[in-house]
Image 1: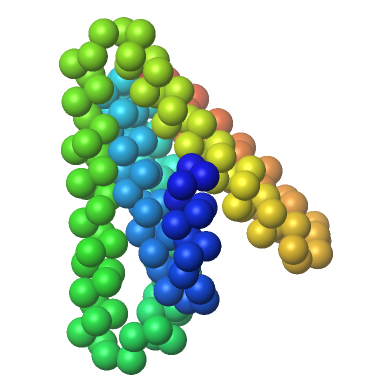
Image 2: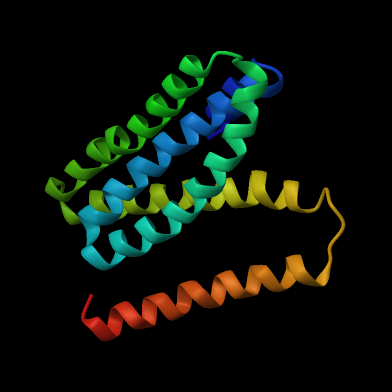
Length: 159
């Protein structure tokens, strides 16, 4: 994670954001592959959560691409490459299922730590740069409650 952060600091401005979003999506793919290797329930929850994250990353990168690349062809090409790194990452994470149980636990722990690092190192820092308001604070709890409700619903369905 420190290597990713160091890599991102070598670039500046919008290009740095675009590259780091690509790296983040790749790591998300690895985490997703590990999640499905561990179990269908874990994989389904990660798929739902990461889909929401990638939706917002897509909105963010769309605005940045217009500023960095004036050509629509380059914009579409970068989006296509970004879309390809998620399944590539998940293919790299999926073989974890063939490892002994100890190493599966190690891989799953890495995946969870990678997600927690992103939240604590990047998202919480960014969130506190803007003043809090009741709507933003309540949306955090609505999202958290939604994931708990989804997990309960999947458990009810037998996942």
